[in-house]
Length: 268
Image (cartoon, rainbow, N blue to C red; front, side, top):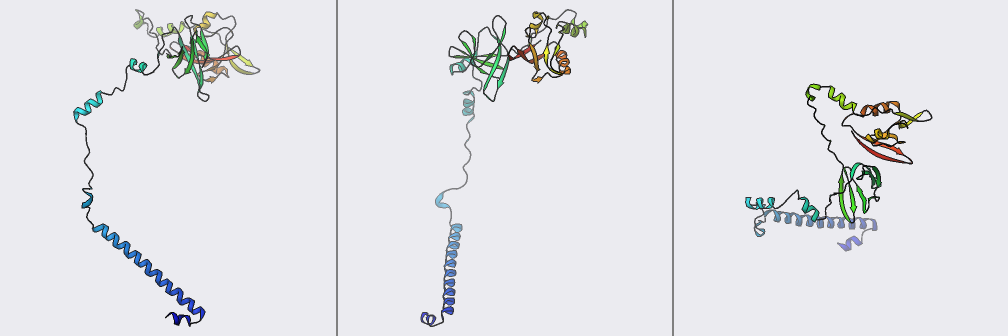
C-alpha cells in the first residue's frame, strides 16, 4: 500500500497521508474514551466494603455532669481582684474629679478637664502631669487612665445626679416646685461677641460676680464659642443656650480662655 501511495502524484499522495493520520487519531481517542468509560463503570459497580462504613458517625455529646462542670468552671464576669492580679486597671483613690473628656480619634490623643482637691478645673492633655507623680496616660469616652508611678488607674465621670431635698409640701406645691428650682439658677446676662457684623461667641459682662460664673465652670473673660459641639453664630444660638440652663441640665461647652480653647462640662 505504501508503494502504491508513493507512485501517486504528490498532491494526491499528501491527501491520502493526511486522511490516514486522521483515522489513526480518531482510533486513539476512541480507545482512550473506552478506557475511561470502563474505569467509570468499574468505580460504580465496585462495593465500598474495603473502606468500611462510610455513613457519618453519630455526634458525641457531653454528659449532663460534664456540661455542668464546664459551665461552673468558667466565670464570664471575673471579680475585680482577679482582674487586678492579671494586670487590669483599678479605680483610683486620688482626690480628683473628672468633668469632661475630649477625644481626637484621628491622632489617637485627647484631653480631659480634671479638678483637684481645691475644686479648680484644669484642662490636661495626654502626657501632662495632673498632680505630683501622676500623669494623664489615656482618654476614653467616659473615663481617663492615670499613670501613678507605673501603676495605671482609672478615673470615671461622675454620672450620678444628687437627689434634691424633699420639702414637706412638695406634693402640694405642684408646678411651683419647678419654678423654685429654676429660680435657683442665676439669671445670667449674656452678650454676643461680634467680629464685624458676625456673632462669634457668648460673653458675660466683666462686672459679673465670679461666684456666679463658677456655677457653670466659667471664669472672668471666658467666651463660649460652642454648645454641645455646635458653634455659636447667631442670637438664636445664644437664646437657646440661655433656655437650656435649667435644673439637671448637662451641657458641653467650648470656651475660649486666653489663647486656648478648653472643653467644660456643665452639670446643673
